[in-house]
Image 1 (spheres, helix red, strand yellow):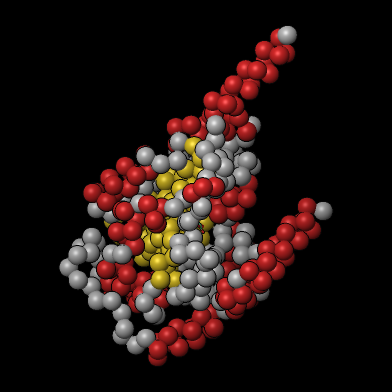
Image 2 (spheres, rainbow, N blue to C red; image 1 turned 120 degrees about the horizontal axis):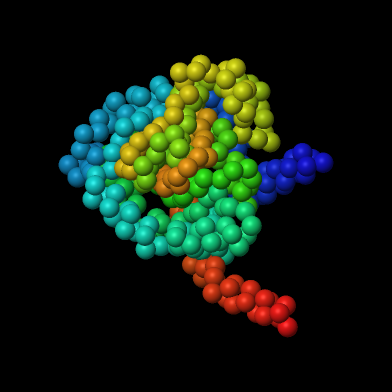
Length: 330
Ligand SMILES: O=C(O)CCC(=O)C(=O)O
């Protein structure tokens, strides 16, 4: 019964995408086929031959070799080993410390990081994720990264045309056992691939230290080039069981990315990937998304109407609990 209702939910999602975002729906239908993606790249190479931004001397990634990164990305779908300068990391931390994050990505559950455990207790189950919104518009360090000349050049060369920055996702993942209150968010902890566009790439950074116990990101190297037909033709789900993927990919293709705060990697999220559930410590993660086209209705997908963002009101929650208790006491 549950399987059927999940299938209906997905079908509904697909139909609403077809109506609401018809151009992205074409990506959804065709972008999963490698041949079509390669043809798209070929087409772009005719249209945009050499029309990319040139690197000037102001990139914050001084030692990053653009050609090597692009070659590695084409071959493996991932390039690991890009580091945020201390100053940028500090600016990002200062921004995070001054902001509310939204538990489960729900716009009515704004909390401070330090209050998140209290919210879990109130809801009776932990939240797995807490997301930051409107970061592209409000966080200068993120915009600085998104406009960095080397970031732009890598994204454009890989995508095959001047890349469009479509927004960022910045979020905490927390240690949980079993199901979280926001179980819909737990799908990112299972292997899946994303269909951002026919061509796209994400720049990912750890903003907290990440080891095996703090939910590292895992990527299946080379899986952007090789996909079983069964996985490709599954229009109802891009999520796959690890046991199925182990039948297709070699052990050495499963790449667990650990690193200190500031460590980064660049990924074609058409590769199978996931974020492990942290065993002990929460992880703060930032991804900048670049694609050939922007299919969102807003400039940045991290945008949420500020007038509709609500903070969870701990004091009125405690006040109403106290009122209930005193009523019970008579
Ligand atoms: O949390 C992670 O490391 C993965 C996130 C992810 O899979 C996604 O945003 O699509």
